[in-house]
Image (cartoon, rainbow, N blue to C red; front, side, top):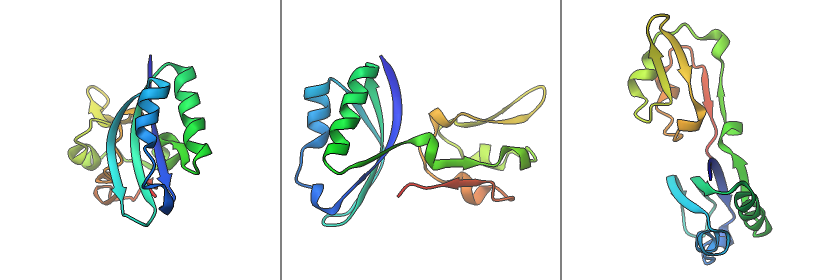
Length: 136
């Protein structure tokens, strides 16, 4: 079993389809909704953590895209300009998910995208504006 995080963008007409139900039932995928912005009759976005076998996750993603859902790995939506970072720690102070950390002895910023929940709190916290996160 593996875990992968994806951002899903739903078209306005997908609200009446039980897509997540089919991921669980037909593809044996465990779903954890980490962030959601859903507006009836309009586009919606979800950050999902999917857990299952690599083959089942791939089949589930194919199922979603066949229903006009845009599926993109989370890593492709997050940009951090690490080379410009001054390791001030401002972003670490607001990162409740633990994706941003600093440890002794070097006190260098570490960013683990796999733990990111796209809360976007790091964006205004960074004095150099080094984070760019696209949720929708």
